Length: 324
Image 1 (tube, rainbow, N blue to C red):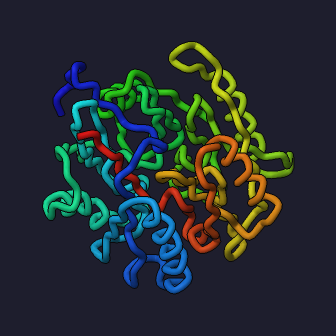
Image 2 (image 1 turned 180 degrees about the horizontal axis):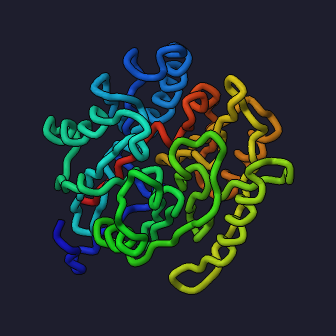
């Protein structure tokens, strides 16, 4: 890929910027959703209705191994001249844990069929999932060392080499690495969208834990302490807002990685995962609403999604609106 022409000012937009649409890759009978296909389909229908109220919806049918559009979808850069770069990174099932050959071919097919417009950029020599990065839209990318340095992603690349690649491909000024935080049951090796989300006005929403007996407590405390050391490009501390931890949810005695951080920002609203826990759900929605005071806050029951170790944001990928 060519290096950035700085006069073009390519950037990865923040999620709260204007969007033309969202991609959903739909559950079907050849995915792991088979035992609960009706239940997950109902959840996807609710997501689809809420998205469609506010913007376009791109549904990918059955040419997929699974449904996690966040991780196999295009990562889209824009510039002030109306340019669009569709970055097609390699998705390899979160470090070769699961088959991903069909998922990894979706972007090229969408592009070739004219479903998405822009300049296609082949980044398939580098493994990167959309759920592993967050952008403030102004040159700072947040990620987790637990994920990007995990086995079977981009070894033998060093952290410095991976950072240089991220800066180049995402046209970023800097990368902030989060070195702590992991949810029990998470298949992704600690995707940032399960832990910390960047919001307007240099706000970081992050997952906290108040129970010292919880196995996640110590690592999340270390994550919180590291976030307190982060500074904006202007040298100011971030505004930190702590999300509650859902009460543990189990499937066959296995703890599932439930999190309120896995929300989706769309035009005029934030779609937030809920888990039929009235007290925790209400507190999470209140805090997210405080971070996004100008948007409607919509709860979507994600107890079905969490059974396959993901949540609402993992199911979706937004496409930014481009100024023409």
